[in-house]
Amino acid sequence: MQHAPYWLVVVLLMVGFYTMIASANLVKRLIGLGVFQVAVFFLYILLAKVRGGTAPILEEGIALYSNPLPHVLILTAIVVSVATTALGLALVVRIYHAYGSMDEDELVQHDNEVESALAARDARVLQAPRKAESS
Amino acid sequence: MTENLLILLLLVMLIVIAVAVHRLRSLFAAAMLFGLFSLVAALAYVLLDAVDVALTEAAVGAGISTILMLSTLALTHQRTEARHRRHLAALCTVIFTGAVLLWATTDMPGFADPESPVHQHLAPYFLQESASDIGIPNAVTSILASYRGYDTLGEVVVVFTAGVAVLGLLGGRRSSGRQRREED
Image 1 (cartoon, chains in turn brown, yellow):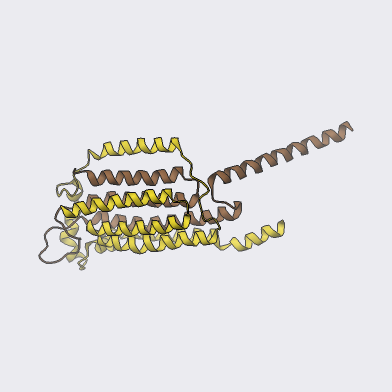
Image 2 (cartoon, one colour):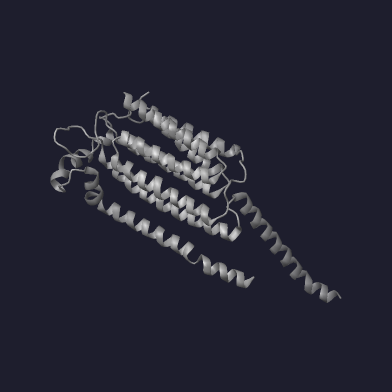
């Protein structure tokens, strides 16, 4: 039972991971990334906890504090995670304006259509001079 | 003991919210529920003695992230996810990774163990000396702004880079859209 919080964190980590790789919608994937990141933060914060300790704000008469170092690392990580989320969402907006969709399957389908249309055009361009010669 | 039970309860709540976010097809509802997810996470951080982290999570995670998600949904016109696909390969990957991680937790020190290796190095120094070195009672602030000041500088560089990149991606959007329309 001593490891129960870690088990729950692993489950949370995997729920975020599954949302990230199984969702077709790009915003949903970024939400999955957010869940994954929060689970990683919890892993650090759980490690910092000391039984019977208090928040690391120094005060007379308190002997036991939780470890402040992981808190600092996660403070930095939270801000960086929001920066990466902002960048990801900006990319989603650009993709939406270029393709009219933010669903991965539709993006791939659109790309394939464009590719086959270009291939068909190239084939026509290559065949055109030969037809001219034969006539 | 009750504190530990509360922490476990909040973690279970977080898992339930994460599953609900995955199953929701309305993107607006998913974004709002993700804000709630951050708020519950902040609550759990308070119970784990990480009050500074809780403040940041509540302000940045629940506040700014939600605003970013909602503005993305406002800039695009897609409100719902097209459909759910069941992804067998993804499920297998997730279950396998989860099993390996669960196996790895058996090697970790017990939860809240004061003898854990994390607490033997650096942390005692910070807790004993930061009051006289820096002169403020909050050890987290002392480490953030002074002992690990370069980390914070690096963080500022990352946020600046991300800000410039977002401006570069979205700032020229109108003019490039107009150009494309003229080309058409």
